[in-house]
Image 1 (cartoon, rainbow, N blue to C red):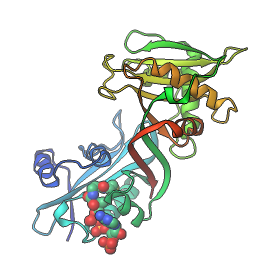
Image 2 (image 1 turned 90 degrees about the vertical axis):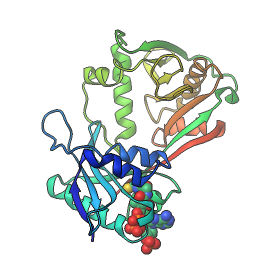
Image 3 (image 1 turned 120 degrees about the horizontal axis):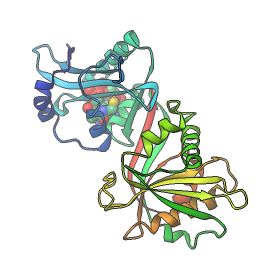
Image 4 (image 1 turned 135 degrees about the vertical axis):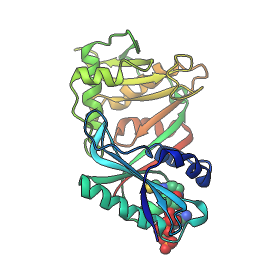
Length: 303
Ligand SMILES: CC(C)(COP(=O)(O)OP(=O)(O)OC[C@H]1O[C@@H](n2cnc3c(N)ncnc32)[C@H](O)[C@@H]1OP(=O)(O)O)[C@@H](O)C(=O)NCCC(=O)NCCS
């Protein structure tokens, strides 16, 4: 018998010990969803976490469902079962209970994020999850692309506390971020000032903008997180996340190549660790031939 008990922070350490060290990024991400409940009122988004107990009241796992405030149309869901209790249907029962919990109180569909090829991925597929996006973290060496195309100027600006990025750059970032997520994980509507606050003021980073020859409009955007800036999102590596502002721009490959070449100049070893969702088609196509290592291959699925 499986019982769902309210999340008890006092038992969190005991449960963590029973679950063991996180074997992959999907698991560590999911465990981060296990936090005290919130009903969605005030600034805290909707979230529920439950301890899974067997008939004797012993913990056998955890389950959580939580809104991602940046992408509120679905709820992130996570189930984890103790290694010594797996393949007995407990995960399936917990996911069904989570679905009922979310539906009763909220009604939004569930969104699962797991690492391709793991037990979590097989379980997601067996539970009827449909893949809606491939999201990879890739080690790249942009020099392997050869010299960047001429004619594209790239501006470099520091982002973080006390900086001010021009409005056309923030607007271009907001609109292209929304376009790249629209079909699979719609982003919360943001004003330009919301976007500035959410992405451009807290965490130090380098922001690159490619300007279109002729009218000077923003044709490509990227965040770069080099070591030493205290952004700390990519540890000792230089992080990259960028794309053309028009996802179907015929010049998209040249714009991405210009961004990558400029980003590589921020990297002490010339290598980047890029976050690439396939929805950003031009970026995915340009980086494919220069992948040195796939660090993370994430599946986003909808249930
Ligand atoms: C994924 C997880 C929750 C599955 O829990 P579980 O209690 O073993 O799942 P179930 O017994 O209900 O399995 C249901 C089906 O999923 C599939 N499945 C589950 N684990 C699998 C594995 N290791 N390999 C292949 N298929 C698997 C099977 O089709 C299984 O049915 P079957 O046993 O009749 O073949 C568990 O492996 C776990 O905690 N993993 C770490 C956390 C995680 O990745 N969570 C997924 C994100 S929601």
